[in-house]
Image 1 (cartoon, rainbow, N blue to C red):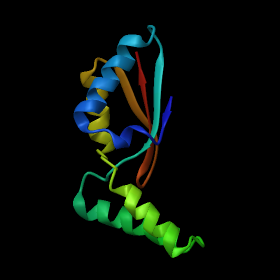
Image 2: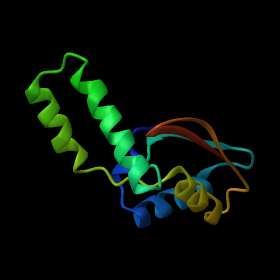
Image 3: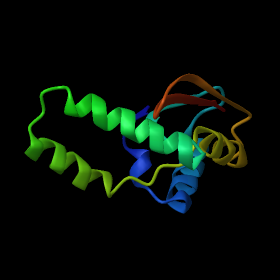
Length: 112
């Protein structure tokens, strides 16, 4: 299980990690990844980002907190859900499914 971590890796690093996970899992084992993703289309991704930022701005965070969040976002290397599912399939996971998605956040499961 991974949560909100893998989106910090470059695509090649993600593929390498997914392959190591696949190689380590026993037959029938599951890999579950809850993470943030881009929308795959620039216009939709911009809307997701704007909505997310608006939610944070109205949450009571200080301007300093929002600035720190924006700074941390520079380390994000998001791919789309479809891209990650393709990476997992390429790493030989025979079953890959997105079991939950809401804007930038999704849960993808790969079963060996």
